[in-house]
Image 1 (spheres, helix red, strand yellow):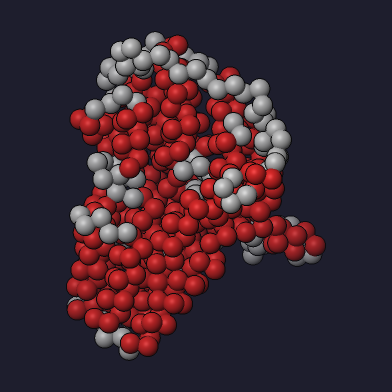
Image 2: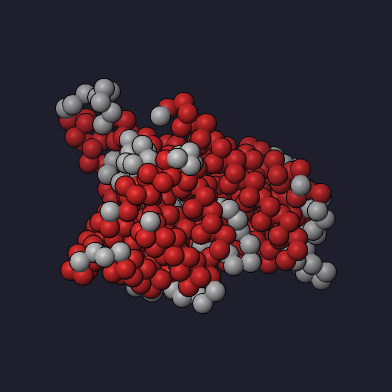
Amino acid sequence: MWLIALLVLAIAFIIIATAKFKLHPFLALLLTAFGFGILSGMPLEKVVKSVNDGFGGTIGYIGIVIILGSVIGSFLEKSGGAWRLAESILNVTGKKNVPMTMSIMGYVVSIPVFCDSGFVILSSLNKALAKRAGVTLASGAIALSLGLYATHTMVPPTPGPIAAAGIVKADLGLVIMWGLLIAAIAAFAGWVFAVTVAAKVDVPPYKDGEEPASLPDLSDAPSPCKSLMPIVLPIALIVLRSIALFPTKPFGDGTVLQVLGFVGQPVVALLIGFGLALLLPKKLDKEMLSGSGWLGEAILASATIIIITGAGGSFGKVLQNSGIAKMVGEQLSTAHLGIFLPFLIAAGIKTAQGSSTVAIITTAGIMAPLLQPLGLDSETARALVVVIIGAGSMVVSHANDSFFWVVTQFSNMDAQTGYRLQTGGTLVQGLVGAVAVWAVSIAVL
C-alpha cells in the first residue's frame, strides 16, 4: 500500500510543482523519478540506473523523430504550404461552410504542426472567411481549435503521441491508424459542438477599427499536393510497414518486406518526409538550413519536448523497476476501470497543469509498467492506450493552458466566453474520443 500511496503523492507533486509553482516539467519529472525510487526502498544504485536507462532508452527511440517532425512542420508553415492546404480544402467544402472548413484544416495541419502555431497560421484566414460569410467568428475558431487538438493529441508524428508510443512500446503504425480514426470521430464531435453551441455566440470577426487582415501572397507557395506529401508519405510508409509485419505477411517475406521494414521505420520515414519538405520553398538557400534558419529554429523548438520526454521515460522506468505494477494492477483490477484508467489519469494531469504533451508523457510513464497486469499488453491494446491517453490530454483546456489563450486572444473572445466554448469543447471532444476508443476495444481486444 505504501507504493500505491507513493504513486498518488508522486502524481500530486508533478501537478502542484508544474501548475502552482511553475517548475519546469523536466525538473519536476526528474525529481519525482529520484524521489519515488528512493522512498520506495529501491537500492540507490538501481535508482540511478533506472533514471539513466529510462532517459536514454526513450530518447534513443524517439529523439530524432521528434526533431524531424518539428522540422517538417516548420518548412510547411514558412513556405506557405499550410495556406495552400487551406485553400484547397476551401474549394471542396465551400466558403460558406466555415466551421467544417476550419475543422478539416485543423485535423490535417496539426499532424505535423503544433496546434498553437497552426491556430496562429490559420486565424487570419478564419477571420476573413467569417467576415466574408457573415457568420460569428466563434464557430470557425472553435472548430479549428478542436480539429487541431484532435490530431495534435492522438496522431504521430506530433511529439506527444510519439513519446507515449515509445514509452509504452506501442507500434507506431498501429497508433497512427487508430489515432487517425479516433481523431476523426473526436473532430466530428468538435465540429458538432462548434455549429450547435459556438455558432450561437456572437463574436465579431474584427474589433472596432481593426482592418481585415489580408491573406498572404501565395504566388511562391507550393501546390496543395506538394504541401501534403511531407505529411502523407511518412504516415503511409509507417502504416505500410505495420501491415507488412502482420503475421499473415501480406507482402510476402522477401525484398518487399525488407524494403518496407526499412523505409517504414519512423526515423527513416520522417527523414524522407524531411527531404520532401526541402522541396516546399520556391528557392532553397543555405540560410534556411543554418542554425539561425528554418532548420535551426525547428531543432531548438523541439529540444524542450525531447528533454521532457526523456524525463518521462526516467519516471516510467523507475516505476517499472519498483515493483508497483503488480500491486497497482491488483488494486485496479477490482475497480473495473480498464481502458478508461489512462484516460482518467491524463485528464487529471492535463486539467491541473495545462500541457497536453506533459499529460501524455507523464501518463504513459505511469501506465507502461501497468499494461501487463491490466491485460492491455497486446500490440493493438498498447496502441489504443496511447490514443485514449491523447483523448484524456484534451480534458480540459482552460486558463493554465497556453493554447486556451492563443484561441481566445486570436478570436476576440473574453475569458468567460473561452471557458464556455474552448473549455466546454475540449471536454466534449475528449469524452467522445474516450468512448470511441472503448467501443473499438470491445470489438478488437
